[in-house]
Length: 194
Image 1 (cartoon, rainbow, N blue to C red):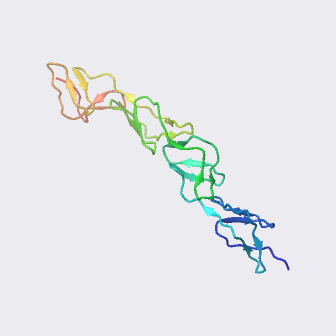
Image 2 (cartoon, one colour):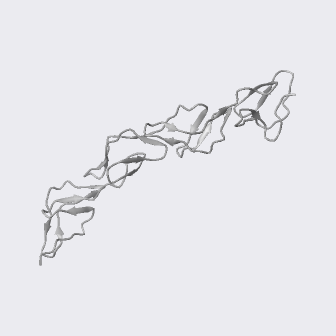
Image 3 (cartoon, rainbow, N blue to C red):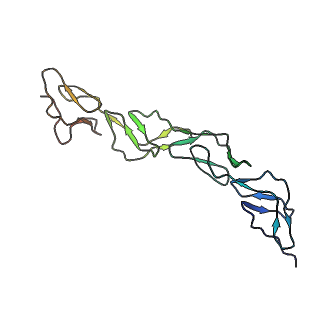
């Protein structure tokens, strides 16, 4: 009885009946040698499939088709497939770049998509922004700007300290904040200058 040969070769996906070796995804070989089927029913091969274990910078995963997934907050600038090189490094013509935004009144977007409004703006949205394939953050929320100061308030600095117009004093030392309704407020108090 003739039985097909088997193998236990590391990082080898398949050996064709002619002895041609296919490395597992994420591995590569420089060898062109064919495997030989031995009398013991096992394939023997002098080559080696080198495994690529470290991803390029800011790459989170590479699937079996070579499609690259970037880490949170980053977008791939190429749709070309990544491949494992025989030197053990992934080859990919693209890079994963940080997402940018041009969203109004948004100060910062963390890599996890958490949005921080600019000082003087607020949001009721708890939705996270998503980093799109175009390298831009997309967000369904909105940072509402507080543009009008309460009566007799001259300015509010980035720490929330209120400066009243000449001849008036703030009725609280609590830092002011912009509310989602577009109005300035002090926590639990009427905001104003008397």
